[in-house]
Every structure is written in structure tokens, then in C-alpha cells.
Length: 452
Image (cartoon, rainbow, N blue to C red):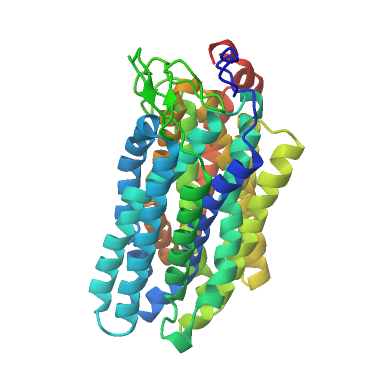
């Protein structure tokens, strides 16, 4: 912005440049691909270590709990330190966690550690992602939301969410190719490879994304202060994409305050359903295809199913949401019904193509549902509260993975339909509660426009 021009209104009216959006997309893409690659090989690793399925699922719980606690902290910190700094911190957490996870699992598979201690060490290394990796997604979401007009926010956040979808295509597709027996890495190869890709993404982020001036860094200041680039900047000026630095500090957002409550409940209940189906799917493939006795052969089919599910998610987020201009309520309610139908098909599937079909339909539904609740939470608050809202979204998403995957696997091991039946029931509960409690799309995209 030309500093001689008068300040623009607080409503963001310029789209984020394609270059910056690509950088943000890359940050989320690498972490999503790495995490999904890990999920595609963990059932086989657990079977090779002769560890119960439930314990493999529970190994993620401590990390998810840390994510719930830390994501809002990092989101508020991004208001003061800038979004870029928190994105970089999140990538560092991802890189270190993936490298350590790969190392301890390699030690377990090689016999250097017992299965028990390998799993404990894996949970500890994974907790670094929950504690520090949770800094990146809220920062990316806040960066986009605070620079996007309300009427376009669902599409913008859907594009960012689709980076996870594309990552979940790339991760399972590459994971079998990263199993390097000749290097001695075996099933832990994807961990090391994605740690290296995370380093590359971190370097690109640091070099290519400009230092952003924290939106609320100048609270109470009346004199000039130094910007992130070192240039002097007046506290009443905006940055080049519309953030204003002299806004009053908003009150702290709570999960269940009236504006957020319907979206948080929908995200929490539906998130548990999504976490359960993710937890069950890998073990389902091994069981239905008879691969329990040859776990190394399971990485390919599991990755294939996850890849088809990710393609369906991309169809929802790149095709259906922008094509039909879906608002948060429409995306949330239609998505959760489609997810319930896909879960029913998956529960009855016996062959690989049937499993892939059911999982893809369920993923299509969750691919509509997740951006819907994210955008609904964002639109329920003012632009000054976007950082905190993104922290709430990330925290709710993490809460779904504290115990839901292990619960789903435990019920599935007792009876297939106990696990799938609970997932379907949760989806239908979201629809019933959301039908009554979620604000209309028209209200969300026009309400409080004058206050932003």
C-alpha cells in the first residue's frame, strides 16, 4: 500500500496474492502428507512389533491432548509475534517429531528397543508435534481469515483445508515408495523423508513469506515502532493486506460462548466420528484382506484406500464447495449426511474396491463438513478475533483425537458394527443438532459486516 494514501477500511478487500497463498498451502501440504504417510504405515509397524491395535491408536492421545492445550496459546501468540513466526515454529515441531518418531520405531523394529519402550518413545516424540506443531494451522487460518471478505471466506478456508486433502493423497501414495529396505530404514523410511521435506518447506517459508506485522502488536502505543522488516512504521498504518495494528484487544474467546457454541459442538461431535473412522480404516484393510500375517504388504493397500479418500476430499473442497458456492451451514449439514452413508458402506465392505468406495464417500462428506464448521466459527466472530477463533478450531480438531481413534478401534475389535454404528450415530446427532442450532448462510455472510 502507498503510505501516502489514506488508510483503507477495516474490511479486507484485497485477495491474498497467489504466491503467498501457495506458500501457506505448502506449509499445510507437507505436514498433512507426512502425517498421513505415517498413518498408512503405523498399522503395519504395530503388527510387526506385535502391539495391540488399541495401543497403537492410544500412542497419539498425549500428542492430541497437547494440541488441544497449546493451539489456543499459539493462536493468541500469533496476534503478538506474527503469523509467520508461528508457522515456522509449527514446521520445526513437525520436523523434529517426525525424525525422532522414525528413529525410535526403527530401533524397535531392529530389536534395539522392546516393543513397549519403542511405543512409549514414539508417543513422547509424537508429543512434540502436538506441543509445537500446533502453532502452524491456527496461524495459517488466521492469516487467511483476517485478509478475506466474509462472503469469500468459506471458499478461501476451503482452499487451505484442501491442502490437507492433497497432502493425504500424496502421503499414502509416496509412503510405499519411501520404504527403503536397501538403506535399512524399512517401514520407517517415510518418517525420515518427510522430515527432510519439512526442512525444505521451512527454508522456503523463511525466505519467501514477508515478515508480517502482528495485528495487535501496537496496543496502547502512540509512537512509532519497528516493523518486522526493521523499517519504521506508524502504529496507525496497515500492512499490505489489511491488518490494522491499533485495534483494541478483544476479549478472550471461550469454546462454548453463545456465538461459537453451535459450531464447536458440531465440530467436536463430527470430529470424533471422523477420528474414529481414520483410526479404524487401516486395521480394517489388514483384516478384510487377510494381511495380518504379512504386515509389510499392508502399507500399499492401506495407502491406496487413504489416497482414494483424499481424492474425494479434494473433490469436495476444490469442486463442490466453490462450484455450488456452499456456505458453512450447507456444507456442514450435507457433508455429515454423506459421511454417515459412506461409513455404512465401509462397514459392510469386504473387498478392496468396496473398502475404497466406502471410505471415499465418507471422506467426501467430511471434506464438506470440516471446512463448513471452520468457516462457521470464523464468521461467527469479528476480524479482530480471527487469531483466537483459529485457535479454537485447531483445539477442537485436536480434542477429537485424544481418545476417539482408540475408542473406535476398541469397539471395532469387539464387533465391526459397534464401531461403525457409533460413527453413524454421531453423524446423525450432528445433523439433528445443526439443523436447529446453526445460523443460516445468509446471516453469516452479511452479519457484522459493518463492524469489520
